[in-house]
Length: 250
Length: 304
Image (cartoon, rainbow over all chains, first blue to last red; front, side, top):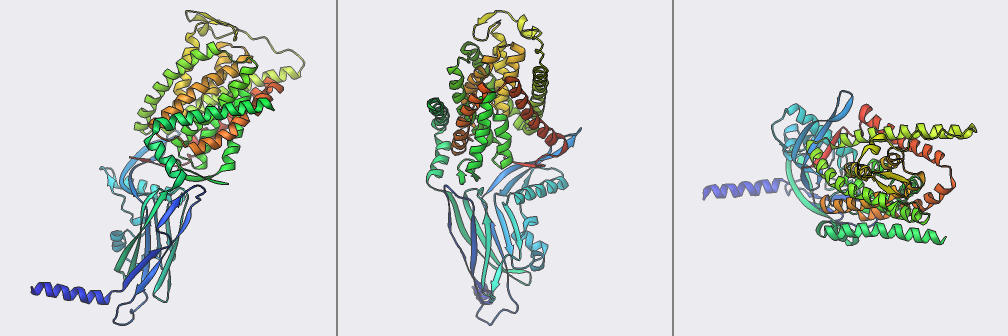
C-alpha cells in the first residue's frame, strides 16, 4: 500500500513537472486518386508547460513521420571481371517505406547518440532489424546504401532545423510526400526534449489510401487477376483494331 | 498532364508516356519490331518499377502489333502458315522463359542477365543490320546493283527434315526451323519483357531467307500472340500490369503503328534498315555502359 502511494505521488510529481503535448496533423487521411502528384503534410501542435512556472530553457522538438514497414532484401553490385553484378546482399525485417524526421535544432545537439538510437531519431539510427549472420561491416554498408537510395527517391528525409517552435509553445513541421508513397497507416510521432531527455511523446496517425477508380483498379488487379488479365489483353487488341479501322478510313 | 498509375504507384506525365508510345508504335509499323526493347528500359529509367514496365510494355506491344498486322494484312504481307508455326514455338518458349526467370531471380542475377542479353542480342543484330544496310545504301548510290544474295537460307535450316511449302514466303523448308525460332523468341520475350521482333526480323531475313515483303507482317503476327500470352501471364502471376499505363502507351502506339506502316510503303527498305540498326545499336551502347562503366543503381531493393 505504501509503495503504491509512493508511486502515485511520484507519478503526480513528474506529471506536474513535464509539459503536456497536444499534436495534430493537417490531414488525417490522404486520398490517392487520379491526378495525385504527392502532397505536403503539416504536423503541428502545442506544448503546454507544466503548472510550476515556465521551463528553464526552450524545449527541443523532434517530429518523425513513418510509413508502413516491410521485409526486404538489398543487393549490392560490385565489379567482377569488369562487369557490374550483384555480389553481396543483406536482408532486413523492418524497413519503413517512408521515414522523415525534422528537428528544431541539429539532432546531435538535442540528444546523445544513445537516446537517438532508442527513439530512432535520425536516419543513421533507423532500426532496420537485419536478418541472418553476415559480416556487420558489410551489413552496415548495405544498410547505408539502402538509406541513400530511398533518400534519393524522396522516401527518406532528414530536415534538421525543420521544426519551427513559436513562443516555446506552438510547433510545426512540413513534410513533402512524393506521389510514389506506399499506402497504409503512417505514424507521426512528436518528441519534446529538454537537456537531452525525452520528456513526452505523442503519436498521431495518418491514413494513406487509394480511393475511387484507383482503388478499384488495384483491388481488381489483385483479386480478379484472370479477368483483369483478359481485360488488359482485350483492351490492347480493341485499341489496335480501332486504330486500324480509323486509319483505313482516312 | 499528371496521371497517377494505380499499380505502379506513382504519378507520371501522361503526354510523355503517349509520346513514348507513339515512337515505339512507329518503329513497330515501320520495321515489324514490337518496340518493347525501347519502351521497357525507358519506363524503368523514368522510375516505373521494372516488373510493371515489362508487364505493361507487353500489352502495348500487343496493341501496336494488332494495328500493324491489320495494316500488313491489307496488302497481303502476312504468311499465316509460317506465323502460326512460330506462335506454337513461342508459346512453349514463354513457359520455359517463366521458369528461367524465377530461377535467375532467386539467384539475384536477373538484372545482370537481362542487361547482358540486351548487349549481346541488340549488339550483334544491330551490327549485322548496319553492315547490310550500309552496303545496300552505298551500292544503290553508286549506281551499281547490289550483289545478289549468296544463298536463300542458312545451310543448317536446309538440313532439317520434313520440308513443307510456305507459298507466301516463297520457301520450301522444314517447319522445325520457324518452330525453334519461335521458341527462342518466346524465352527472350518472357526474360526481357520485349516482343522479340528485333531478333525475329533479322532471323527471318538472314536465317530463313524469307521474302522481305512478308517478313514484317509475319513477325508482327507472331509478336501479337506471344505478347498476349505474356500480358496474361504477368496479370495472373506478378499482377504487375498497370492498365492506366498500358492505355496511355496504347493510345500513342496504335496511332504510331499506322503512321509507321504507311511510311514503310513510301521509304526505301535499305534506308529503313539502317535507321533501325542505329536505334538498336544506341540502346546496346547504353547497356554496355551500364554493365561495364557504371550501373544506374549500385543498391537494389526487392521485397523478401
